[in-house]
Length: 342
Image 1 (tube, rainbow, N blue to C red):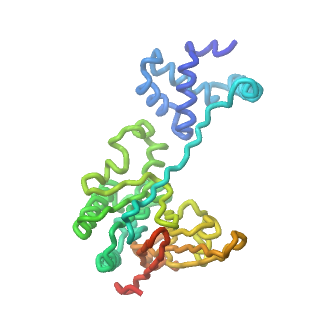
Image 2: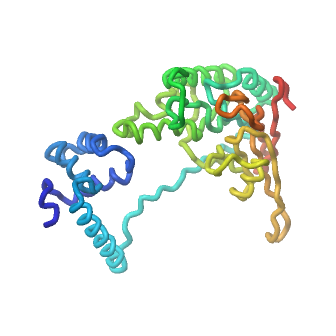
């Protein structure tokens, strides 16, 4: 009875179907079927074969087959659990997150974030750049949410506001500005949750484009042209004895003291952006032979402080400069008020 109403199946084609279902669980069946067929045409007779196979696997071809499929998958899962004791474990699809450690030659690092271009504050950005220039930073990290990607949000939005193309152009113009201010030092850029709106949009609306280099964020922004070092989304960033995170891994709005929230979550020396509010916290750690202290800092933003969607808030403009001696880091967490650093 197995699959008798469906086109001929093989282990290889079934494996292909299941891999794409795992990778793109939210894509519409027809859209996903087109992607599978276009990228694996040699394995299938035609598009309809892929589409029917895909719908079958999702239980979309009738009540009888949904019930039958559920029973089959249960039996298959049971068989796998029994057999793995005698053969081997099933292959894991888990992925280890990458880690980037700043080169040992980097001693003074400027950290900025949450510009939300094109809703950035020009005066605050110039004030931060003036200070980093005066302090002689030897590297700069743009720690997420450089761009807002307003039109790609799944929140309610005004279609009359800035379009995606204009945001990309503004992002490239910002890179050009940074290179004119800091022509000879490394500049690093890691996406935040707002830039990740782009990949989320592709996953749901245009999954066929996900694997194309032309639709990678770093390619669209021409980061190589401006000699910007691109770090993949959610890479762990290490500078001396500090972990640098955008902060979107921490749920909620950060609480009254976002640095304290980050410290309790990450349990190590850390820097976060994301919460748009400057704060700091420390915690003595007991029981390691001698007492030690871990520290956390949340940084201010460089975007508008009273957006339409949240006019009342506790945000402030700010950035940080981290200085490393050996492997120990000291942090100057600067606030900006009225274009003045405090």
